[in-house]
Image (cartoon, rainbow, N blue to C red; front, side, top):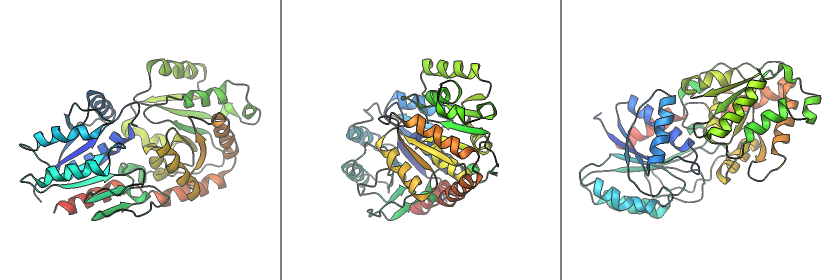
Length: 363
């Protein structure tokens, strides 16, 4: 098959979770391994810096083009892309943005139809509210998204979660007594959930400390790429006071190994949650936006995770998370059931399936 050119439109910042760029990087890497020519289409310098930061963590590099538009107003892309495709057009255009509307895709289709090149389109949907006029749709909601789509190719359900293959190939053991916890809030933690959890476990005069053996409990804490400097210092100060806490920055390829060494996890409802499921780590989930809340509830209903609440408005969130963890420490049967269900829903082969579908579409 001749080398095809693929554009991926994605952004990441304090409002748009870094998981959008991160999952697209995973798809891009797999496409490149199949001989495709991949270029990221980014709205602004901020997203470009996020791409660079995440790429450095994974020892990867990607070509990128900055449109110098406003990420939350995607219609501003149209005249810029119209000018670009006069000289350079892709074979496939994958869009990943919560701000994109069906009207945006319609305008893109008009541009592509007027070019001298056959261009296929795809969209990664997190909301299951609109039908987008694309050739390929991806919605990996584990609760089984309602099929409202008219796309030629529909990749629906947890089996299409775009995560790196190693997460589905990692050995995982359920220990009788839990001794290590994995903590992640994603790229940002604007609600300071991780710091509050650590304080509750190791420092606060909380009820859980009367029944939880904190001396035997270690925490692997993922420091997100966009954590602010003051918050990083706060986490480091807590870790300095408690040797059981290990902070991880720029984890990259070691993430699957860190997860597999933990007996249960606390995670925001983003891309990391799907990786934890593929490994089989029992997880209590919190959300930081509406999209994550819906995803997390789906995992809970499926028995693949336990949803604790929304960090934006649940003032008892940390206490509920710690209470769940306390109950899980000496309950291997509970953790085993959740682990099995999680691995059934997310098999770790989603990226491969997505790329195979894209290649088939362009054939």
